[in-house]
Structure formats: structure tokens, C-alpha cells
Length: 280
Image (cartoon, rainbow, N blue to C red; front, side):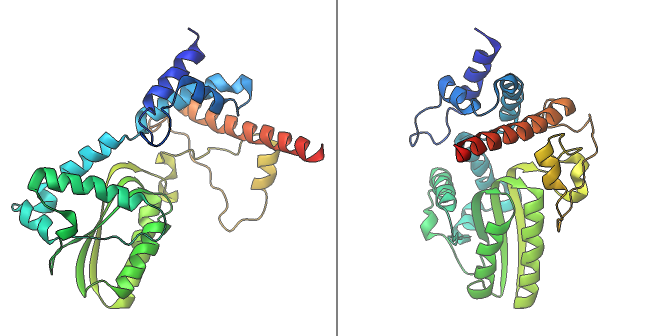
């Protein structure tokens, strides 16, 4: 079996539970079709790093269930009388777009029933905390837009809100938190907001040298990318300082840089193909 075949099988195995029951189980052939969008010369290098990164950060439904279960039994959150605490909690159902909050609430409801015999829909008493559940914070816009409306229209004069997220990007959480604090001050209400998550990813500009995302140390040497980056921008690019001691979730600083270069070159290849089709 070739190295490529081994990597295709490995990636398929890592993501095998993705949307289980909704989509066909991923196979090596499925991954092979996906990687075909990259130029043949770059596929193996990309598969190596993609396999490594996915093993670091792919979160399964079981991971989320374990996280929520640990929250249900967390003394720091629920205190010495967890049953009473959860009986008083208000579970917010205020997501304006998407279905992720409903799915997260289903998982949490099962934890409450299994551990304390509580029906999530019957929880909520005056003075109880509020919980906003979701899967991921990227930019922070979703949690901000949902909660700002609630703060303005339905939130009590005093409240504690726990934003519980599976994967949290620090930049998005910082944005949502800072914007919500402004809205809270304007509302005249006393509302405190806390964030909890399984996986936290650093992507704030201030901490770019320690970031866990594909933050370039330099603009890739691809003409189209160079031309785009030369355009006027409200938020000009600031390169990350390479740091071999801070590479997670990547395998190395070299592989991280190579992955960016491959993505840039693949983008140029796809643009060339689209241009050829358009002129045919």
C-alpha cells in the first residue's frame, strides 16, 4: 500500500463519524475525490499535514457529549446542589440562523435526564442562570447577534449567562464579549457573561505569533495572491513571526508554511481552470 493510500484511509477513519446517519460514511475513495482538487504534485504533502491536523482537532459527537456531561457534574458551575441548580437554569433557544443550537440542546437534554432525571424543557426558575449553547464561535457574529436581541428585549434586569461552545476562536469570543458588554451598559441591566468550550483556538491579532490558525509569516510567492494583497485594505496584513516552539495543531513550522503555499498555488490553478472554461 502506498503512502497516499495509507493517508487516505487514515483521514477517512478520523472523520468517519461526521454527520453519522445523515451522510454516507466517508471512505478513502471519498477523500481521494476531495484531494483531486489540488494539483497532483502537491497532493501527498497536503495529505500528510491534513492527516496530522485532523487528528489534533477533529471533534466527535462523543467528545461533545463527554464535555457536556462533565459540565452537568461540574461543581464549579453547578455547586454543591447540582439538581437544584439545573432545575433553575434557563436554556436559551434564541438562535436566529441555523440548527446547531437545537442539536446541542438535544445532547445536553440527554445528559440532564441520564444524570438527574430532569426535563430540560421544564427547567428555569426566577433567579436561575441562563445558558446559550452552540457548536462553534468563528467571528463571534452569531452569538453576538442572538444575545444582543435577547438582552434588549427579554433579558431580566440581572442575569448570569454561560455561553457554552464546542470550539471557540478567541478572536470571535473577544469580539462578541466586548460588543455585548457595550449593549449591556446601554441597556442599564446587570448581566454577566462567561464562556466555556472544549477546544480554544488562538486567532487574535495581538497574539498572532502564538496563533493556532493558518496565519502567514509572509505573503505566498504567487502572483495572484501578491496582487490581491497589494490592494488597499481597511485591515492591512500583518505577518506572523515564525516560532518553532508554537506550532500546534500543525506538525511543524515548515509544514504550516508549506500548507499555505500549496493552498495559494491551488487557488491559482483553480482560477486558471475557471478562466479556461469561461473563454471556451
